[in-house]
Image (tube, rainbow, N blue to C red; front, side, top):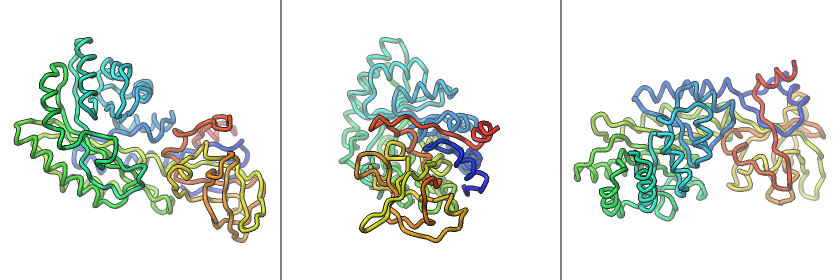
Length: 393
């Protein structure tokens, strides 16, 4: 998503900060995803936790994907956006009774269940409502995703899923749950995974677990392998679309499926990350003893990932690029009263001045959706290119 001179000029006319979404890039991403997943008959659910912006959701809905939700709020958002209940999966380690009731009433595709107590509560509620509910067991495969420790979810030390050793006990409980039907098994080992070896290791573990179920004459209609495919934060223009071909081909090659068995995916970041940028303006350039600071009007309240995950986002001075200014180094920081409110240390940028427009790239996933009003900062707006042109008209 290269920013044109016209677009940069439009950014400069708007109050900042705001989130900008390139819907054209999102549509191209979805086209590639559908092409590569349809080759193998795979089912893809969009992970709502990555981004719930209305324009983004409507674009994804039109592509025909399902919805992956981890809260009642996300389930309701999916329903309100037009996703049919039959294409909604509901995961999450701590579902409330009210959230479970919402999912049952909406006749969702499946509850991905993470513990025996959860199965028992879903059974109680389903029995009271006189409904039969499909469930999948989220199994912790103890596979290392080789990613940041805060976004690793498939190790035994993590809070997610049922350990393999507990499966016999789980089946005993399910046998007593007349209103639950075991439809599948579910896995998710982590996020921002760029080494596909981790997914191959997951396939090996899934095959072992599948064999365990086969040996007990248990037929599973579907396997949900989760998501986690990463994107290139360092080169968003050179690699704007994730490696969907290699990703889906790997699962097709290494999963040992039963005849007619469906495979489901829950992808979020890989779909929306590159289409989004956080647009901000420089408030002040401050000379320090060891470094100069570019103080922008966006902060960790709009993009918490650098503070929370120590993550990298490419930062561009769009105004300085147009002026073709000489390069200099800056610590790019926000206005929030926290030392961790820093987007990048010693970032090489064109010579910077007050009012310059900055783009913080690859912010389409876990940006707007994780925003807060800390320091009583107001909620910022979001725009697509069509929105900006409409406002200018």
